[in-house]
Length: 270
View 1 (tube, rainbow, N blue to C red):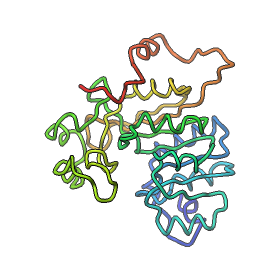
View 2: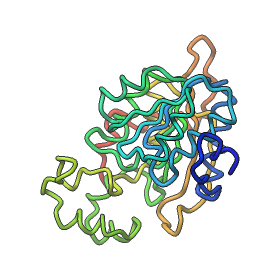
View 3: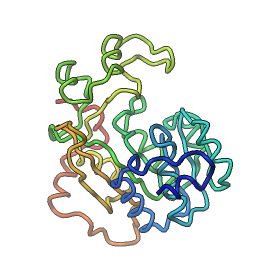
């Protein structure tokens, strides 16, 4: 891994322990199945300096990679300057103009980002990128504290504090929920820096299914850190081949899907 992340420049390599094995396995499973030659890594700079992008570039025969983030760092820029296959897009990946800049790719990586997305909500972000890709590779803290997807802020501050990581950012947002954030121009309640959603697997499956994708890979890596209401789950969703019979669902899965109104997932409350 150190060779991998050091080859594109002279900066110190990202420590291997910053790249989760769960996420590397999800990339391997998705890219091997799809024989992917292009991908976009959405929000992939923060904390790992584009490490998963670099991992995929070395491990697979990639022609084009796009790394999208609002916080592209100078080390990442220097690495990209030495890698002609890598494009950097500075901006919010939830904006349609940014999605158009990404263009068509074989796979879209979404690591730890869906639970933060509001206006547009997480399911609308998937809808934005669905026409542009053949697969979603997703790793996300998934909610196991109930059977339905919830907007965590709707549970009240006491319950919110019990469920999510303790953070001064969360405390500050609660103190100013309806005030406009000076950087993002949104109410504090809608910024992506805080935990926004508890997403359950059934609803993620239902949204992807509605968009024309089926789950082809899954891993439950267990409790997310010490948060008992969240588990770290990995998914690969591949575009459904309509020319083949669909035998992928069990009767139990079909029943669960039928009971889920994917179009209204983000409006549900408990």
